[in-house]
Length: 311
Image (cartoon, rainbow, N blue to C red; front, side, top):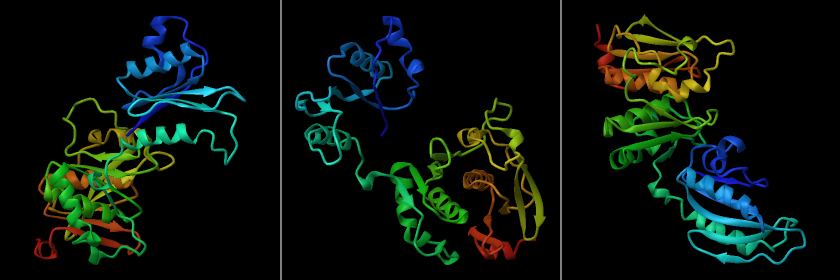
């Protein structure tokens, strides 16, 4: 769920400006699906301006809230339901209940937009105790939920503080349940917070918005694995937001020398997830990830017997 919320004190100068450029003049985001109009009581032009913003963007209006002047009349709920119409006072102090009725009505309308918890395809990988490799097969009791969400909804969101290899284990679990599943990793440092792990690189030669000069990848032989090493080449050793927003344009990995893959290097978890998914789709038979805590590769997917028998 997302929505707009704004005020407008100076009405636009012309109808054309009102209908075509309100978000440009007021810094309103262009993404969202619901809108809330907030204006001063009596400021019909300002209120209609924000109503036009909602209309221009195809937003469903949650309501229209009119602010009352200081020492104005008591707030009232003019209309409840899907499009709340109410007034509210701005000169309130903590503990003042004068706006409670209007706000409670608005909150009910907003909450109707939420999904039931059982319908949200989110799996929290955080746990109070440290993750242990023995939890990989069932992901600490989460594997069944991930598989069910992948099969039923076609999408899985993985989040929470956890090792990279736990995220990769969750990714592999989702892929085994539904090879075309959409998988997102939660990263609060990114503008959109959710980073989608692309199923495949974009078509070779197509224009890419991924900062190709910011990431270097290379293979090294470390029997029984071939290790794909990540190196971020920016001065601050961080990838810019455009990397997470355009992951399908990341440099495709060269053909792996071995079907048994290890991933290594200081890089965001969604870089690990992207190359893990691509390499599995390309025919990898096992996957491991370097763990800084144990200074060793953690086997995530594929059997150890396959690795031990590899030439």
